[in-house]
Each structure stands twice: as C-alpha cells, then as structure tokens.
Image (cartoon, rainbow, N blue to C red; front, side):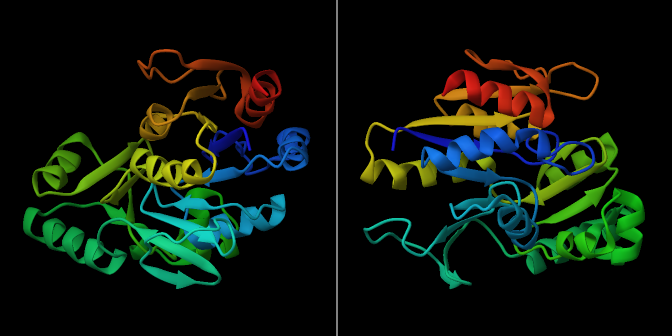
Length: 258
C-alpha cells in the first residue's frame, strides 16, 4: 500500500445533486490499485454507510466531522484501542454522545433566548424540504451519534455557543456542534495504517473551511472548485487546486497525483 485517500463528501466527491457519477472512473482506479478511500464527512454513520454501499467500499470511514472512526473487522492484523463494536466495525469515538450535546444546546438556547433550530427539532419531512434530501435520506441525516446540526446561526448566536464551551464547525446553512474535528480523526487513523505501512502517503480532498483540519493532516492536500468555479481560501501551504468542480475536480486531481 503506497497511498491512502481521505475525502469529504458534499461538494467534493458528491455534486449538488448528491451524485458521484463524474468520479466513477477514479473510484474504479482506487479499487484496482487497492488504495483505501476513507470517507471523512459531517454526515452520520448511517448516511456514510449508504454511500459506501453504492460505491462498493469496505474501508474505514470517519463520521460527523471527525467525531468517530469506524474500522471494519479485518482491516488491521494487530490489536488497537477502540470504544465499542457496531455492525462489524471497531469504533473509536471522540467526545460526548449526541444526547448530551443536544441537552447542552437546549440549555444554552433557553437561557440565552436564542431562536435557531436543530436537525433534532425537525421531522424528516421538514428536513427534506429544507435540505433537498429525499425523506429516507433525511431520516439517516437525523441519526446523529456524537453531534448535532444547527440551521442558520448568526455570528452572535455562534459566539454565545462557543463562549459556553461548545465547538461549532462549519458555516453557511449548517453548523455542526461536536467535540472533535476531522484532523484529529485523520491523524489517529493514519497512525494505525502506518503501523502496518510506515511509508504510506496520505491524500486529502475537500472543498470548504470545514475540511481544514483534514487537509492539514495529510501529505497532499487537494481543494476542488466550488460550483461558481472559485476555491475556498484555506491559507495552507502546498495545497493542490484541482481543475474542476466537485467530483469532476476530485477525479482529475487523483488521476494526476496517482
């Protein structure tokens, strides 16, 4: 094994309609060369497992903005520390579970008189309308285990949450409240891979500020274009700017690097 690929999903491997068809040839190339593809997303375990099934993947994955690593049985031939086993995966979790996170959000919201909504406040049907997901996909998006997602925070609300000790990740429409980040999870998983493959190189692909930790933690960070053709301003040295939006840039970058 000479490389590991870490990838964000929304806006990176998935386009605006949640399709990865434009990246299928590159996915096949990774499979043929036995290069692990570790999905590293703000999505839940249930959502990521759905995409892994569609993509034919059996590699570890990282959910909820780095909140947990899921390592399939048989991935490593050595023992390592983990917290629990779920569905044939050894789980390494970071931080509190979602129930505790939600209770803390609700306490602050009530005391401070804040007026935002979370995924937990919405029905699957309401979230489907809000997000553009199918109702079944919205059900999976609500199955959070280590975090909660808040819709449309303003700067004042975000500051209040952070002043009260919550870690708020993201921007725009959705903000994830969790106790870890993608970078910590990527470093942890890479450390396991390097026990078996000391010289393995890591590639990370993302599109937004939410991916900074992941891109800082890999050897070759790659930024794909946004739908308007621009790139997120990351301020990272040595970053590769892929020629193409979302999965088009994703495939182009991997073809060039590998």
